[in-house]
Length: 278
Image (cartoon, rainbow, N blue to C red):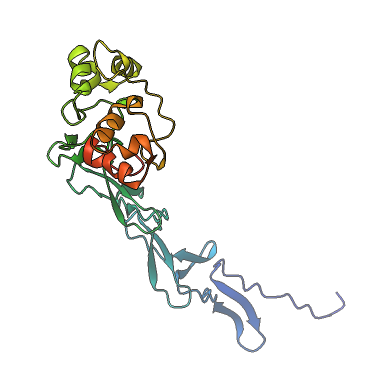
């Protein structure tokens, strides 16, 4: 041996992963605790002697499937945001089933208990709409309404109303209201064929008007113009209504069909004025 000094390093390892081991020249081995603080208020910090730092997330679960649970890392406060079940339809009531987290969209109830309205909901405003049931049958000689108890449309006959000329096809006619002048043509036609006054005044009914064995006026049903508009004089035989008017005002069939003649269509023949007049 040559008498030289030897300096073996001191092993300060303590086998603990939760300490930082070092050696102080004056004091010897030092085992400083490991700092496991991650500055996150949403974790519980600890140290495992075998593995080192452990950061267990804070549980913010509220057991409600209809919330989104989270934690504020600055404060550690739990937040429970409601699940958004809005379907952007103002006509649904949106909810969430707490047990399953399923969004439910129940239709808004707009029923008003009135069988004479069609109930609906405006998806933009959520406003309930109650449109009246359309019971119009297009027949000016019926008063149209809806039965609030049954929801059925009702069409009550209007007294002293003749829907149209006996020389035109269309709605069934009222035999009494459509009979005027000396020749009760409508009553005779309906006595011959009840269909004309019950169901529809069709071409067969018009043919019976022209049949001299049924109606005695020898009607041609070929007026040179509509009897609801002014114009030249009309032949009495062109229509039963014209014949009845000219029987009381010969001017209409000898000189001209003026406004007084047109007005007589309603007063003498019970055919309402307006778009229905023909």
